[in-house]
Length: 590
Image (cartoon, rainbow, N blue to C red; front, side, top):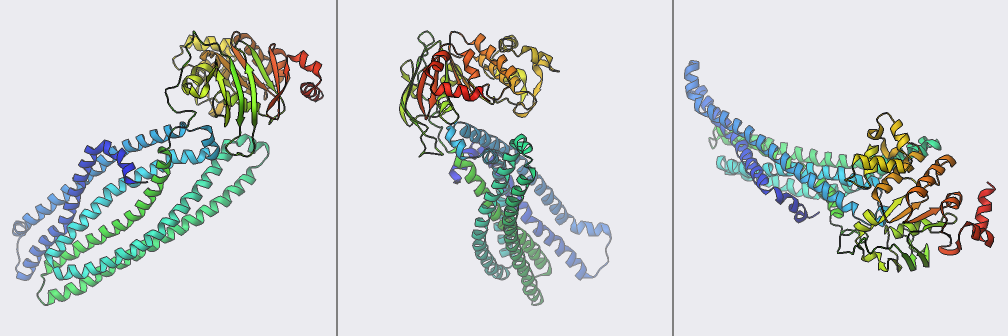
C-alpha cells in the first residue's frame, strides 16, 4: 500500500481531517500543559511548607486559586479536544471504510471468471470485510494517537528544555538509543506479522469452504476430518500469532524497561541538582511529570509502529484488488447493441479454441465449429467432461475463446456490450440455480428489477411454480434461506425458470438444468420449457437423454472430445447407431 493510494480516499474528507488534526494538536498541547500546571501548584505548596506558618483554608485558596483554576481549564480543554478528535475521526474513517468496501466489492465483482478460479471466496470475503476493517481501525489509531503522541513528544521536549537543558540532554541520548533498537525490532516484527496474516487467512478459507458445503460434509460424515484439518491449520496459525505476540511483548517490554530506566536516572540526577540549588523542588516535580508524559508518548509511538505495520499489510491486501482493471468479459466499453428490430439470433462458433486458465495445457475445445439458427430448440448432449457446459459458458461470455470467434448475427460477441448481452439477450438457467437471501418474489424479480407484482405472478404461473409458492406460509413474500436450502431442487429450478421468463431473453440456455431432479420434477420443468420458449432460440445442455428426447424437436448435437460428432433429431440419431445410440442404451440399462 502506498500513502498516495490511501490519500485518494482520505482527501475526500479533508475538512474533517483538518478539524481532527487541529483538535489532536490542541489535545496534545493541553496534555503538555498538565505537568506545567501541576508544577505551578507544587511550587505554591512548597513555598507555604517552607514558610512554616499556619494558614486558614481561605488564605490557602487565595494563594492556590490561580494555578488550580489554570489546571482545571487545561484538564477540561484536553477532554473537549479529545472528544472532538475521536468523534470527527470516527465520522471520517467510517466514510472512508464504506467507500473502500464499495470500491473493493465492485472491483472484485468485475473480474473475469478465471479470477475466481484462482481466489477462494473466503479469501475475497476477508479482504472486503476484515482487511478493510483492520485498515480503518489502524488508520484511526495512527491519526489520533500517533499524531497526538508525536506532537506531545515535541511539546514535552520543549517544556523539558525550558526547565533544565542539562537533564533534557541526558534524556536525549537515552531516547536515541531506544529509537534505534525499536527500528531494528520493528523490521523483524513485520515479517512475523505478514506470516501470521497469511496463515490466519488459510484457516478462515478452510472453515468457509467446509461450512459452505455442509451438506456434502454431512453426507460423508466428514465432520471429524474437516475438524482435524481445521485444527492443523489453526495450530500453525496459532503458533505464528504467538510468535508475533512474543515479539511484540519483547519490543514493548524492552521499551518500557528503557523508559523507566530513564525516569530513574532523571530522579537521581535531578535530585543532585536540587541538592546543589541548580533546580527547585517544584521544577523537579514538573520535570518528572513531563518525563512521565514523554514516557507514555514514546510508548505510544512504539505501539503505533506496530499498528502501522498491521495497517500496511491490510492496506496491501485491499489496494491489490482495488487497483485491478475490470476483466475483459465485464469491462464497460462502447460495445454494440443489436437493435431489436434487426435481431435474428443466429449463432456461430467458428474454429473456437479454449482451455481453462487453471489447466492451460489441457484444451477443452479445438477448432470447434457449430451453427445454431434462431427460433430453434437445440440440444448438446454427451458424456460429462466433453465440453458441453464450456460451450454454454462461452456463448454467455463467461470466458473468451483463446482462438477463433463466436458471433451472433455475424457480430463477434467480444464486440457486443457485455452487460446488454447477459442482461437482455441471453438468459441462463444452471444445474444448481443460485437463489439469494430475500423473498421468493425478490428472486424472481432478479431477472427484471423493475417488474411489478403482477408480472412476477404471471412469470411464476408460466413456470408452473405459482401453486407451490402460494402454498408457502407467506406466499411470494416467504423468506428464502441461504442458497435456497429451504426449497427442493425442483422448486428452485422452477423459480429460476420464472426468473428467466420475466427477463424475456431472445436466447435461453439450460445448462444441465434438470440433471439433479427426479422424474416428476423433471417433467414439470420440461413442460415449463416447452410452453414458454417458443419463437426463440433455446439451447439445452444435457447429460440425461430423457431431458432432450421430448423437449427437442429440432436438432440434437452430440459432443465428444470437444467436437460435434453427430447431429440430428432423436430418431435420426438412433438410426445411425453411433455415439448417441450407445449413450441411450447405457442410460436405458441403468
